[in-house]
Image (tube, rainbow, N blue to C red; front, side, top):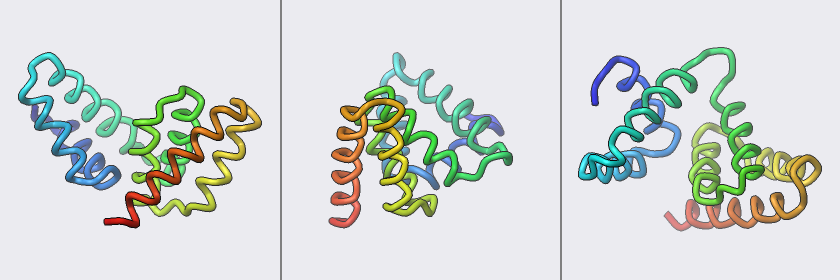
Length: 128
């Protein structure tokens, strides 16, 4: 798993999501030849190609991800990206505003779940 794009993506992924989370994901994938190609794709394409583009800053990308993950009802990924958003300098108030907007465009159930997941992420981060 090494290429310039992968290495660049790995650095960004670790900065946003945290070294511990990323390394655990990669370790589990390395031990499993079934999932390893997915981890490589995620790291190269998502993090190494898209997240490194200069047209949007990381805060903006994080806020967009929060909205999309709420709309798609992906609570596990949402929690990870709420933590990443905080790491990228997004405030709780900004996350709240995105979740309120989710209610308007995606429905109240999506927003309610987003608020629940965000509160869990905040609580876990404060406990560390």
